[in-house]
Length: 362
Image 1: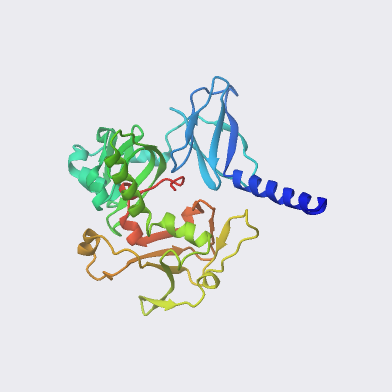
Image 2: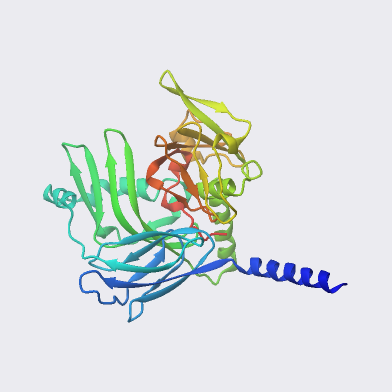
């Protein structure tokens, strides 16, 4: 082997090793009180919808290691407004965060002034559990540990139910083997439209067990929950592996008030798939504002079919509706944004917190 070939081989080998080793990155920063400029010790810092979090030290500093991809970095502290910042391994991740004292918003004051519903948990508790935790088979093995923290407010004039919580909700998911701490921002159900919208900041923690059988059950249940999920779809779309992973795409058009599906030959062209380089997010902007997603490798749950008798029974069908002229960005780990610019319906809507998996699930 000549010296030139040896050098070339060595450089190739080192680059290969270097690329293989870059599987995570660090987020560093400091949390301070916005008014006093003093460091805040014990602030909770975590990547939303993951198992990854930490707390600030006595100087308000934190360091968090994350797998490659995008996340919403969330900072919470009792009595202060929650901060959420989008981060990615492609950006600078030295972050200083100023926390502001929480004051009741005008909306919260208005809700509270209408009066909390007496026996709200008794009247609306089961409904809340179905809308928040879900009605899937996994929901039967999931439990809200602190339901007493919920406060229910019903407006007769608006025909609206709003639910607040005095503390983070603690969900024990024995089906998938996770404890979930959920900082609930809001929960609203509009009875006139039968639409429920809830937002919050979940942090997952893997349950521990000495039973190998239990570990196998959790592993199997997680794999089942992942297959056909929106997380599975986003990762498959990012990697241009939709067909290989069992997904099909349709463009939805409205004809005489009814949705009709248009088959497409090239999924990525129909979605206007675009990625600047291998480290950048994938951006899609479909040719229609509504797309249908078929997952052919799994059938819908029986409970879903019994409630939706008109849907196909042979595959899972979900839809994503985009606001006009809005696009969707997807990171390598399946993290997608801006999540307020589109709605998810049909089968994916059936899957609530009992079927949720963290972004660091592999």
